[in-house]
Image (cartoon, rainbow over the protein chains, first blue to last red):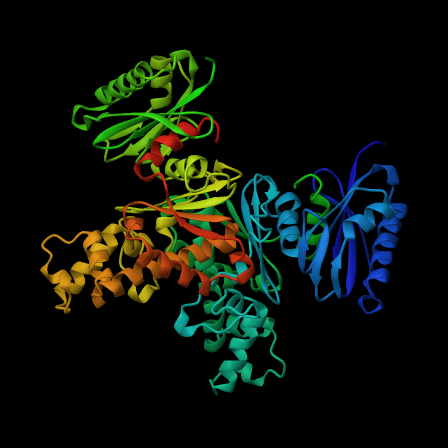
Length: 316
Length: 316
């Protein structure tokens, strides 16, 4: 048995998810354990090591078959040096994780940020399988992005390519400030946070909406209300879709991709969101650039991070 | 003498410009002759062949030193197949130019469109020398774009990457229709054509502006008036700069380039344009993405096409 396997680690604030992939990007085994963020960097690193060894022991594979271990981290990473610069949710800063894990595991290690790794996961083993050039959006608390060129993550000049959540798409007059300090970022309207804010604002303004009866509004409540015909909710979903569609249109003339993959919690809204995104995109993109291009939902869900992290070895 | 040389052909509606470059992208010799568009494809091809042979004869190089001949064409090209699909200004359609020229010249031939080739010229031997990842805008009659990744032209899924003139940057409410059929393209405001249109509209509206005295307004008149303090002209230049800056900001979060190169006739406006573009860009781009990034004027002027066409051999 000499088949090579690739291990992907999705390092989050609550859980560390570890997966084993084959060369085709198929997720064969998974293991999930607590991060124990509160116990600090030493414990977190110990946990990663332990879970990686555990998953291989529990699998039919031998340790020798492990070609490498990749890790995706929610935060800023220095991909070349293998350093976690700042991962606020995991409580890590300036951690030379590649060096440390290579010594402990005796395997080659690669890291990248969660948005890039999720994009690669979808491109390698998910909705983008077989496609060379695609762009992924992850609509969650924020809006993350990843650019896949020739099957690989495109990093750009300083590793910041694909910061799609911070495209300034909202016109100055109706822009609000983003967490990044800039005005009018896509993230302010098309993330779960943005949708919830718009819903709360509407309720506070006294709009006649079923959302006024919801105690702690979540993005899903807004989608459910929109599906039920609530006009305020429909307007909010359309606004999130409008700026997302405009952003896709801008990306399309730059990169001329074959595929847009939209993932993250907000993408679960389904047709009510996708129909409008496709509408807006069609209206703002030259026809030749639209030809053959598809806009599809992500297919791996929460597994994208593990798959993409494993993929760092074949696809970076 | 065994040094290799690279020949670049800039095929325009009026003139065919041919240049010889060395391996460093330095333009050593040039030759320019009429296209004779009105005489049809056969004559145009004959002219290209003749000018290419002529320039080598007149140079100190031997025919054997020619490593290849590249051509840039204003129009739609099929790069892979070496076909000019449609070049309206040159009067060519469905011309298998690679096949024809390879047979006639006995040399390897490559083609691409004028915007891509100009971008490569600047990246290889102009303002982008030494930079791996840059994005070029050519502000002329229209707005062209070219994306350079790892020193090479990035084509995208169907060869349409870098169609930056057709980014829909103008909000729907103030958008006008572009030649491409779409509303609000960058080209409608930041091209020479767009600037002239805005100036004529202002005069037609009866605005108090020195431009009212100009008989046949050109973009340069608008820049001169703006430099002299004419408020209408300043507003027009700022509007062209505003949407150009917004477009740069959108490209920056997608590609995280090291350099933006702005060329074409409109770029000759100089500081009055560049200062405002840099201002708008700084306001609409996340700080980390701005770090180390420069926005500079193109340096090769009308030679960019020849240099880039020659560069197709080392850089594509």
